Image (tube, rainbow, N blue to C red):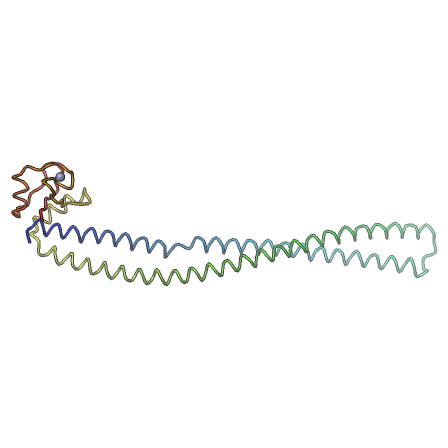
Length: 231
Ligand SMILES: [Zn+2]
């Protein structure tokens, strides 16, 4: 294998390593992405808070209503027991009774509205909880699939690194140095020659150059500086 051919092979391994590393990064990003799950958890927590608040309002309204009903019973017993004889006092009691009954009707309306509100909120919270459960299962499943994929990619990466290092050890260090220098600024340091052209920059090469490259000399393109490789 000529030096250019070795470097071309090295480049293939480096590009494959780059692709696999990229794949690993993507898998790791997906593994740590639990935004949908977090959003559903936050949403459920806030719905439960609101529900608790509304339930408290409902209980308060129920107690208020009981208080008013107790007051009405008290006045009615005064009115109908015959213990109160004073007509003016009786009229006042009746006025008071009407007032309390009016308040009771209004509180009953409020309570009914609160009860239907609570019911609605309970239904919404149940739906969110179901959605959260579904997301959790999905996430768990994705963790398993991705974890499996991550393991596979890591194995391939380790194998590629080993092959790369083994190959690099066989290559003339001077050649590696030139290769690394070009690769620090370009994705591909080695370019093929096709139809007398450098495939890195598509400039036609002097015949003598590609002939020397074909013979196995380490030749760099005069235009893009890449190492020329001829099959
Ligand atoms: Zn070139």
